[in-house]
Amino acid sequence: MKSNFKADLSKEKQLAVLLDSYYQKHLKKYALERISDFYALVTNIFSDVDKVFTSCNITFVNREKLILHLSTLGLTREFFQQLVQDNRDVNGKFILEKLCPKKEGLLYFSTQNKAEKPVNLILRLAYLEQIGVAKRLV
Image (cartoon, rainbow, N blue to C red; front, side):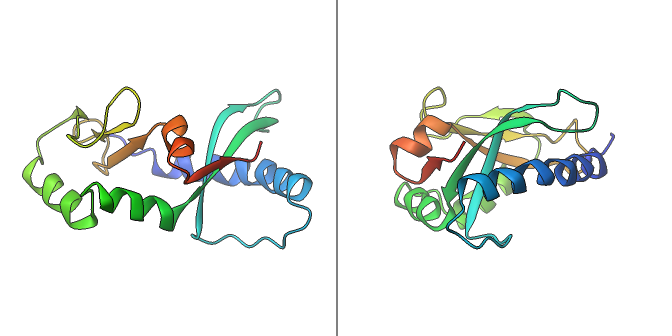
């Protein structure tokens, strides 16, 4: 299995240049520092020039509000840890009882195609905006 970790980090550093320009343009009244209070979900990334990202959409997600909302559904850190432990051999989509997979979200296990074997909670942007934990910047 091949790891994409280094390649992903490289792309993230390249994308940071574009994100910083967006933040300066759209958040002029704020002093910004990279921290983990909020998540910035970056979608629709375009590159008109090789190795230079030229546009994207940014949606901010309030991490604390998201964790609180998920916990009200019973989707706590402990729940996910146990679920991953009990489903080590799963690969691909995993439907969560508390979320509609088409409108809200699901888990995705990459146990057979990634060296890191990540488990990702995939939540729909429209759902995050609907429950009041996300707001689109650009």
